[in-house]
Image 1 (tube, one colour):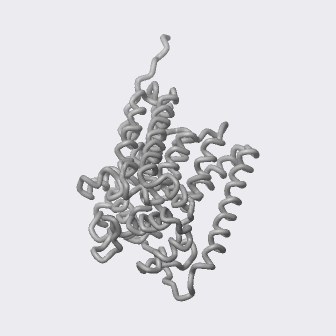
Image 2 (cartoon, rainbow, N blue to C red; image 1 turned 30 degrees about the vertical axis):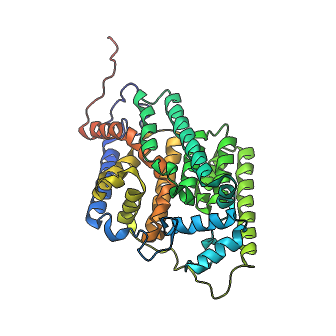
Image 3 (tube, helix red, strand yellow; image 1 turned 135 degrees about the horizontal axis):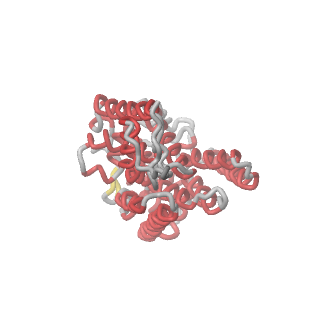
Length: 371
């Protein structure tokens, strides 16, 4: 089997000098994802936006209107739980099981600083995440100099942070916080990332897989202090959810609506559709996701580092969640990972070139000692 010497400056690339067989396997998987996306169809009925009959409030529609209505009631002096349950009941939103009602954290913060203040705060947080990712990509000496431009791909896909309607969505806020936490994540100094993830968890329980993954890495590293910290966050989260459920019992009635469940089973085409409408690519045809998303994942797979591996696992994990559980009207779940997904595109050309070299068995330039 042909073995190729890695080119200088490609040590960061996991696909540099891999055996030809494994290069072929990776390319076949990449092609299979593209074929699955194309044959399954992207967009159309796979995404269900707000209907004309959906709730409307102050020019907003659907879930945006719901959360704004709750916020206005809180600003008028009503506490969160009666405001949330009354509004969801009045507009035929489910109240069973308890986690159909969002945790109060985000609404409480927004009621204090207002909608404009919330947009400003989230914008600053998003800018911090973008700058920290640029710094992180520049700090790795093994990465090529152009890697820093991956932060531009993140910036292009964070446009929601300056929108009044999208700042109301918990997934948008949680997605920005996940991006910030991963930029801060360093195994030797996990505490900043831990604090940000704890805040994100207090806003949206679907952040839990990220906390679990970073906690698992702490166990693998035998960093018992960090592992204890992640365990503490997990126990705190369980306590918060238990309190949330207990508090709701005073406001929820037995005859309130129950959610239809989360068994979308839309598969890979649905995931691509959700990413399309949640990202800057929504201005382009939906079929652009067929090649772009697999290439972004390939790019993350190429970066040989703890952070690169973390990003790949996070992206694949949430992709699986969206493929299996998200209904067409849950497309906004993709905003949890959409800010960081397309950063992987910056590594995709080098990944493809390395795979091509392995398939063609073209030796990379190496110095030959004089005889």
